[in-house]
Structure formats: structure tokens, C-alpha cells
Image (cartoon, rainbow, N blue to C red; front, side, top):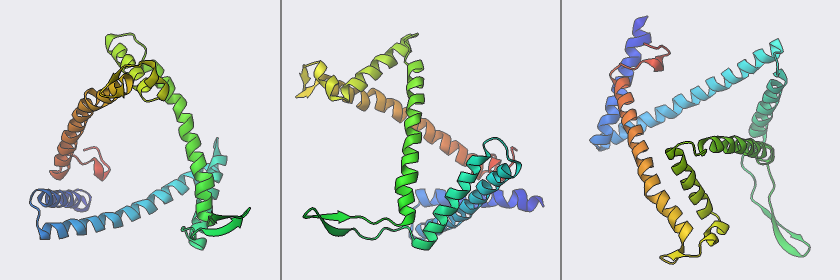
Length: 234
């Protein structure tokens, strides 16, 4: 049993990781074909994981409705929305027909007809998504207020930099200081300098750290040191 639970998954991870390593550093026609095959298998596996995710979602909300726990009415909405979108997609398709031109008040105007799936997506899902992100803006403002409180020198530098960048991004801020540098208002010029130099240097440092972390994690997986992907912690 350990053969199928540990040895084979570790061997597959090692072979796949080693082949991808060769494909990147020793590019040949054969390695490109192997990479394409692996990409196809990744898409196939992703399709099965999508089905597993759908089953897990519906099963979770089914048990909430069955036990009638607090908020189980939202699980009903999940089921209604899921099956409404699925049925609309299979029955009518997901592509809208081409716009038709109609004469409205003597003017030729293109009129778009929506299929049920795209109508629900455009006029229900997208507004709800926008609402959710709009609510998140209040949490972002609250976090920014706590982060920008000038209690230390570092927080003071962060606060001053944030004020400069925000003012340099709006027309009113650009007109606050009439001076110009290289035919550009001072605040917009200073904003671009901050974003292209200190901020970019920090971003590149973070990306280098992320890259080293990815390399370290990949090597741990390839050599079987990291086995959490098999569902265990050892």
C-alpha cells in the first residue's frame, strides 16, 4: 500500500520535475514535445480537480441545508445560482449573437442581444462582484489608516511617501506645486521617480526572494523532502 501512497507519487514528482528542469535549461525539439505533453496532462488533471471542487462545494452546502445550520438560506442561493447558470449555459450556450443594427429615433444604433448565461453573468454576477470589492475598499482604508499612523520613523516615511504618490496621481495634486521638472509638474514627476526607483527596487527584491523560495520548494518536492502535496505533513 505504501507503494501507491508514497513511492509512486514521489517518483512521478521527481521524474516530472527533472524533465521540466531539462526542458528549461537544455531546450530541444524533443524536450519541447515532452513539455507540450505535460501541459496537456495538466489541463486534463485540472478538469478533474474542477469536478472535485464542484462536488465538494455542493456537498458542503447540502449538509448545511440538511442540518439547517445558521445561514443555510445562503446555501440554497448557491444551489439556485449554480444550477441556473449551468442549465442556461448548456441550453443556450455562452456566446452572445452578433449585435444587430436598429433605427432608433432616426439613428442607426447597434443593439446587443444577450443569451441567458451571459445576461446573468453581466447583470448579476459582475455587479455583485463589484459590490464585494467596493466593500473591501473600506477594509483597505481602515488598514491604511492603521499602517500610516506616524508612530515610528519608518511609518512616517511610509505616510509621507503615500501622500506624495496619491497627490501625484490626481489632477488637483499636480496643480498644488506649480514647479516643473523636465516639462512635467513636480508632484507627478516625483511620484513616477518613487515608483520607478525605490518602489521598483523593493519589488525586485521581493520577487528575487519569491524566486529563491520557489526554487527551494521545487527542489524539496523533486527530491521527496516536501511531501505535503500527498495529504500528509511528513
